Amino acid sequence: MTQENSTETTPAAENSGSDLFNTAAGWVLFAAGLGLGLSILSDKYFHGYDAEMPEEPGYFIAEPESTEGPAEMSFEEALTLVSADDGAKVFAKCQACHNVAQGGANGIGPNLHGVMGAPFASKAGFNYSSALSGADGNWGWEEMNAWLLNPKGYINGTSMSFAGLGKIEDRAAIALYLNENGSGLPVPEFVPPAEEEVAEGEAEADVAAEAEAEQDAAAETAEATGE
View 1 (cartoon, helix red, strand yellow):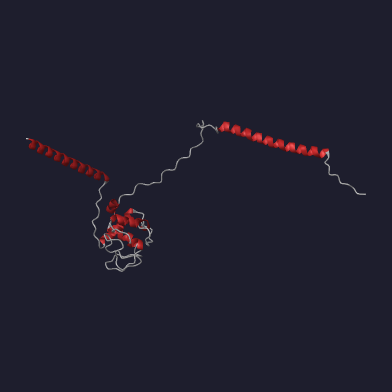
View 2 (cartoon, rainbow, N blue to C red):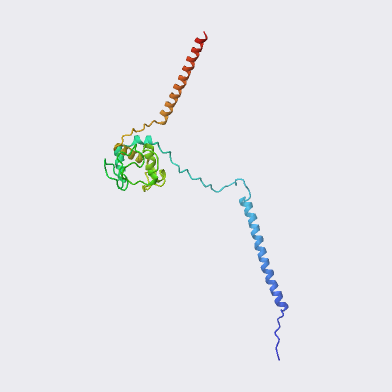
């Protein structure tokens, strides 16, 4: 005799599953309502949607101060603050590659005797990079200043591996030292800004006076001709 297994669900089991579902759904709705209520209360208390300044603000985050330092002095001014002797000391950083002796041999870098005022890449017997040998110009004061500050930035593609000198006084000192060794370029005169403005004002006044004198002379000539 075969016993048949019944798969029908009893009414008690159905009621139990329904109660569990209702209980879980109730807790979910309760949690959602509680969260919504707390959100509304916090917005009212902390003025979450109010664009006005609260009565008792917390603290303010200060903006960082500017990191920009004072403007660098002009190269002309820097030249007045140092000497060729100072440049000889700074040039110690360059002696692994260069020398300034008259007739001295080229090393990793060219001999620099008489370089100030000379054309770029003009030292005989040295194999310059194509970037430097293809550049036009002479080693004047401003050119040397820019080169010593950042060689690769000044002439892109140069094989010069030196990173540069950040202090303008060091660059000015080396330029004076190089100028003393076989060059002799006139050192540019430094005119303080206040004196420069006065000089410009005097020059403008002189031009105006000359123009007025010419107008007076022309008027006198016209009167004499008319008579």
